[in-house]
Amino acid sequence: MGSPAEVCSLEHYLELPDHILEDRLLTAKQALGREVVILGHHYQRDEVIRFADFRGDSYKLSKEAGKAAGRYIVFCGVHFMAESADILSRPGQITVLPDLNAGCSMADMAEITQVEECWEQLVRAGMTSEEGVGITPITYINSTAAIKAFVGERGGVVCTSANAAAAIKWGLAKNSKLLFVPDQHLGRNTGFALGIPLQEMVVWDPYIINGGLTTDRLCSAKVILWKGHCSVHQRFLPEHVDNVRAKYPGIRVIVHPECRWEVSQKADAVGSTEGLLRMIRQAPPGTSFAVGTEIHLVNRMRREFAAEDKRVITLDDYCGCLCSTMFRISPQHLCWALENLAEGHVVNQIKVKDDVKHWARVALDRMLEIQ
Ligand code: 13P
Ligand code: SF4
Image (cartoon, rainbow, N blue to C red; front, top):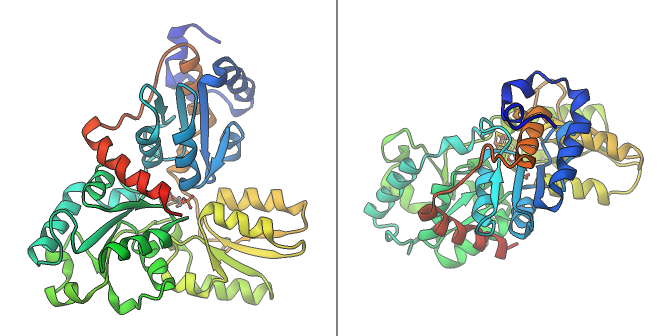
């Protein structure tokens, strides 16, 4: 390992070719030993996720963050995941995101000031009290810590794609109405699967006065969905399901709930990334799957399940379903982060402010209690 001065420069690392990083990553990880826990989301590239101590979806990784024993949690994923890990970690633990540019375009579609404005309008319309008597606010984990805190303070909960159904049931047991932020598709797909008709779910557009809804429409709705989406999963279209079924008769189509409603309706099953993996793991040999989610996970499943005589293909070859922000975590960034930690330098720490942390933790703890 180089001198501390060399270790600190990211530019130097970005010039290093992948093939020399493997040994350095292993050496840095060994040097840190139990001091570090590396968490890797399923969408990470192979050359990064192979160094993860735990892989999983947002739900599983939140649980691991809460249990992590080491001094450092290095999160190979995106910003909201590292923020959640920091909120759930013990005092004194340090969470690191190897590239601070690894954000999530869906999380960027809801700003705290917009959510506050929306809530104010719902209060003014007499639909809820400021404290949340009338409407339960639910935020998908793909959101800022400030929104998680907002929801926590108003009796609401964070959900992930793995427990959205349980969160909606929980929210409707408290109040007859929900505000679901920021993924309209996860909210709509899950609400519909629970028997809520489409007409009872309205979309709040934060860029239009009053969300673009009349007070009557708002008051008659059971679920108010935020107008947000994942641009990666929107690329899957209903015709992709028709095409793949025509080409491979008998193939099972499984998709992530961030896909649009028309796609999820045509699919055989819908699940979080961990859920999709489980469906393939539990299928008998000889089963074929077309999977509607991020391409790095699909390609990894294709390779890993080939040995069990299971065929895994992407739902569509041409839509380029790659999460460019997940992709930002490169082996170079990971090596830079780990070697710096091994030298005693903390780089790219994700630190949620204490006042935000309290209520965000309340909302995340509720999430971990409901499955
Ligand atoms: P999962 O929690 O299902 O892994 O989803 C996270 C995500 O951002 C999917 O786009
Ligand atoms: Fe965000 Fe979509 Fe990427 Fe998931 S796949 S991290 S929702 S942009």
